[in-house]
Image (cartoon, rainbow, N blue to C red):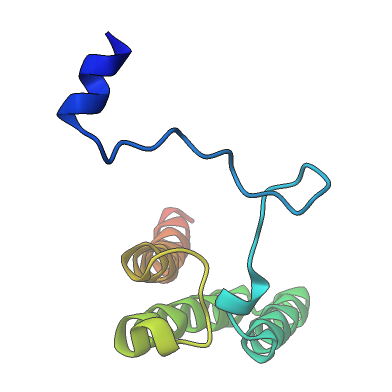
Length: 115
């Protein structure tokens, strides 16, 4: 039975074990991910948004975070693989960022309308 499968598809290779870092952890390439400067900018935006929300301006804090998410999504769509912000694929990153930005604004607005 196994010989018949090999003759039908001679290029069939046995499954390869997943790449690991040597200690049993999955292999992650930081060199292919985003740049630390972009992560630092987003961290600062979130920190400023938290301080603004603490001062009582939740609408401004929500706006800051949602605009940052929308900008990250747009950057990922426009720059594709040259983008300074990468997590997964271009469509996934762009969808998550843009959906977060729009979702925050819609959620905040709907809560304000209920009050």
